[in-house]
Length: 297
Ligand SMILES: [Zn+2]
Ligand SMILES: [Zn+2]
Image 1 (spheres, helix red, strand yellow):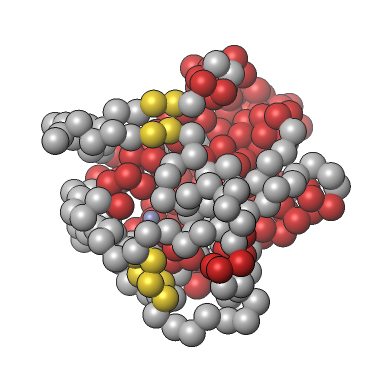
Image 2 (cartoon, rainbow, N blue to C red):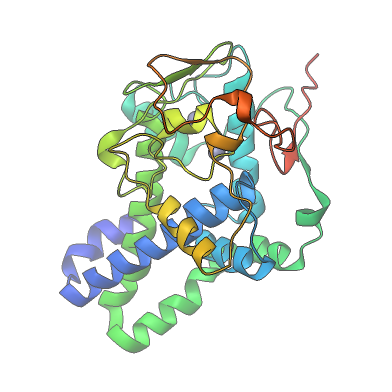
């Protein structure tokens, strides 16, 4: 995809193809990757009808990284590794820029004693997710045919190839910088990797680049927690709530603080004190849909 994007992208550029690239990237990254895959499927940070979840997760699959089960596996494996007292340089993005890029985009970490991956029955028995998981790479095809019928090869190149290449590479870039250095409001004591807020990427990442906030409150549907942190994914969830399509939304105001969380800067007034939390909230230190057991001990 990246090779086609680099070679054919400039040759087929048109403003309509570029507009398609912007719209499709925005929809698949915001509805799909950020809200559907990450905030709903992986962290269950809000509730919604199953059809809404299916539509959003399908759009997330179009980003081109993996199917729904593969994305849960990738995310939770990394999350589990980063919460250990020590973890491999791969999982904490500790290698240099080019080496980390090669590792993350072209290699896979195989542990000698991997934790056990156990998908919750609701997802394991979902036939739609099983179908999308089997066919996730082919899901670009119907869109490519549609784009070809409407706008010819420029729409195929920019609506599929350039979009997938930019989304996948951008995901790595944000993951790389968000685990190395930057703004930090919280630290999680005892965790091998810390998250950092990558301010310049906050808007285009749909809020995902505020990764220090995400390490502090993984189950929060809101990632841009402080003033000046634009979070388009959060705005979408608020719109879904307004339409009656989302409810039971988690934010730091109704979540318990995770073990080891320590704030480095004074707490702003709009964030409630944990003493006001309701006991019904799930522990954010546990993964929502998959559980890991360290079998190395
Ligand atoms: Zn992280
Ligand atoms: Zn996460």
